[in-house]
Image 1: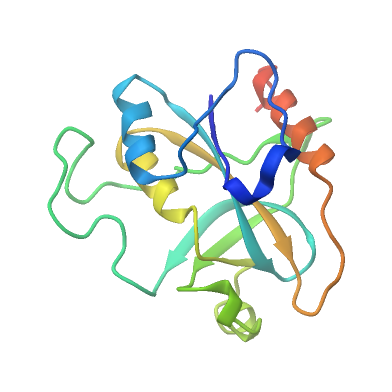
Image 2 (image 1 turned 90 degrees about the vertical axis):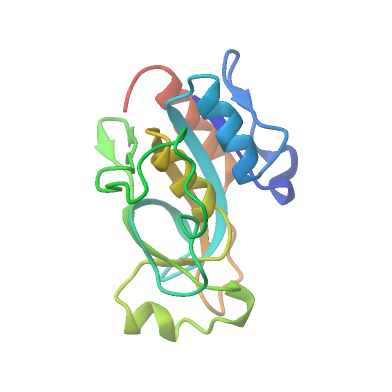
Length: 175
C-alpha cells in the first residue's frame, strides 16, 4: 500500500513501517507507483461533508471540469474507457465497515455552500484527490479514498489519531 496525502495534513499521519508515503501528491506520482506494480492506493483529501467526520468514498460523481480520462489515452495504464465500478475499498475497523458514501467533485470546495450535497444526494464534496483515485483505478489499482470532512458552519475537527489507527488496521491485513 502507498499513501498519497495532501501536504497540508502535515505530520499528522504516521504510517507504520513498510508503508510508503509518496512525497508527491500528483497524478504522475500515481502513474509511477502503478509502473512499479503498486495495486493498493490510500489517498487522502479534505472535503465539505454532510457532517464532520472521516468518510471513505464508496463511489463518486464528477460533473464539473474536464475529468482525468479526457485527452490522449495512456495505453500503458489501461483501456480508453475503463470500468471504474468497484474501484473503492471501504476499510473495516474493529470488524465494522467505516462510514462511507458517494462523493462529488467540485471545482473548489471553498465556493461550495453545502446545497450541492442536498441537490445531488452525496455525502461529501471534494476538489482534490479524485483525479489521483481515477488514475489509480485506470491503471488497475484499488483505492481507499479517505476524506477529512467538515460540515458547513462547523468548528469541529477530526482526529488524525483515528486515521492512523485505520491505516495500521489496513496494513495489518484487515480490509
